[in-house]
Image (cartoon, helix red, strand yellow):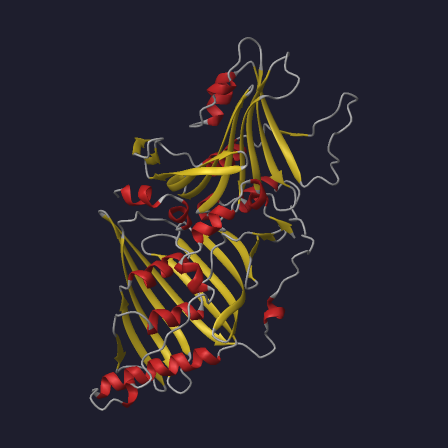
Length: 487
């Protein structure tokens, strides 16, 4: 198991502190589940319908308090689109708290899909992508939990209603949730593919099917309507639950975090198709990319947490890296970027954001018949890296004295720092994981005869594809910047 290097290199302990809010606490049992008033079902002043409703809620609460292990399958779709997320989660509870879970998530857009596996041990989060080792990522998104479905039903000031048309032996309970805290937690837990401005409003209409004898929530169906300025977005979610055998324990959910990964098998002549399948840009809605821009002794480094769809950036948190620490975040929403000046005032500017991952993947696809594998050698011509033990393969494309050729390939990326006087070689390196075929790096560079090393380079390193929720962006950014944004 490899520990996420962003934890140490970028000091993301500060990021984690920013993320520890109600959504994460609620999902992991940080908040208790409060049931309806114990005396509600015995109050003679209540009408029969209200008494039955309280009886149902008490049953749900009693069942949850005794819950040990449960499987929750959740399907989330975007109305009017092809995007879909399916999460299959096994969850272990103890004394009413979520102590561990392991889930598999498949995100699909038309024929493209991206699979991830998540594990929470009660303290830390781990993620594994196909043909890649488990890595610790405490910013990883959560699965919708049995606990949170129960909180939506039982807690808050919004009244629920019993439906008289419920199937035999079941209660059908309808509720419209408007409580801000519950909504905030819901948005943080659902695997939404897009983030919204702080001015967005939400309405959650939920329908439950509950076993009237046991109090188990058998099914929960949600319609989430998001209004952000003049735009409206509708998501539909449906969860089904199944109580697991007593043999399912916290320990039994733990995967082998040190397991060796098996490389993706690629048939002869099928590398390009395999690369496309391993990098399905349509199905990737969030990722991290570090950008390093160097021209001689001048060097700048940024971290982008990006939310995008089909090559269009929806939102970004952009952190400046200094002394291995993030000094502060800018906030990008659409074509507007917001930051704070030295005197503390807010700055707004128009900036066309770049979907670096989409650009880099498409670039390698477009130039796959021109690149050559590259392994650096020493002065004696011996490989610096042992090809047999290397975890990545570098594919290189060069442009002799052709700055314009590299600029065309770079597209919207500014490479003016790479332009040299006189003769120079311009190039691009694509760094691909050997086992998974995921693109990990995209390096644009230039080199002259006088250079002893590459000192003019733009480096883009990708990680955490689909591992984090778009809502994380707002948690990282200064609240003043978030509130200043108008949709």
